[in-house]
Length: 226
Image 1 (cartoon, helix red, strand yellow):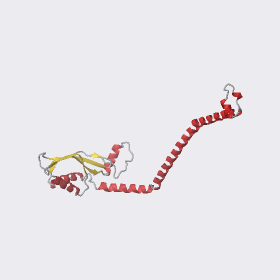
Image 2 (cartoon, one colour):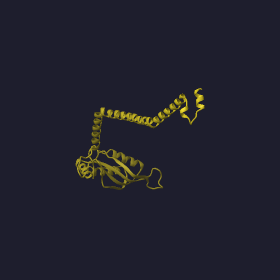
Image 3 (cartoon, helix red, strand yellow):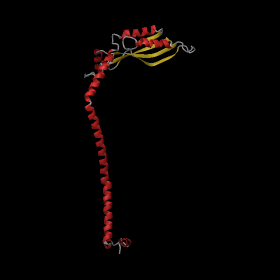
Image 4 (cartoon, one colour):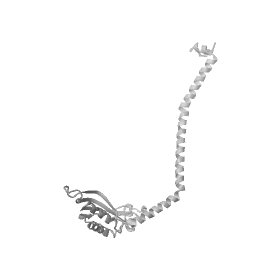
C-alpha cells in the first residue's frame, strides 16, 4: 500500500497502527510547527532587536563622525569666535557712550530741524538695560513732507557716531486727510536708539542678574543696564 493510501485510510483511534511513513510525516509536521512557533516568538523578536541595534550603531557612527569633524575644526572655530567677538566689540565702540547720549539726542533733534521738520513731540523715556547695551525709547510726533523725512534720515546717518534707530508702532500718514498727495505728513510713534555699556555698568547688570556672584556671560562688551 502506498503512502497516500495510508493517509486516506488512517484510523484516528489507532495511532499505534499507523505505518512508519505516516508517523514520520506527522512527526515532521510537528517539528516544523514547533520550529516555526519558536522562530516567530523568539527569533523574530531577536531580529527586531538586532535591527534596532544596527540602526543605533549607524546613528552612533554618524554622531561620532560629526563630533570628530568638530574636534578637527575646533581651533578654526575658536579663531572664528575670537574674530567675531573682536568685531562685535569694534562695532559696539562705534555706538554712543553714556556721556555721549545727551548730545546724540540733541543731534537728532537738530537733524530734524535742519531738514525742515516740525517736531511737536520728542520725549525720551527711561533706558532699558540689556546684556551689553542699553536701549532708549523716544516718543515722536513730527510734521514734514516725504522728502523732508528722507533728508532727516540722511542727516542722522551722517552723524559722527553710529546711530541706530528702530521704529515701534510708528505710523506715517497725511497730516490733513484732505491734503493732496505730496503734502504734509504726520509721523507718530516710538523709536528706540542704543548705546553701549561701559565696564562699570556691565558689572552692575551682571550683579543684578546674578546676586550670588559668578562670572558674567561673555558677549562682545558685557551685559548692560540702566
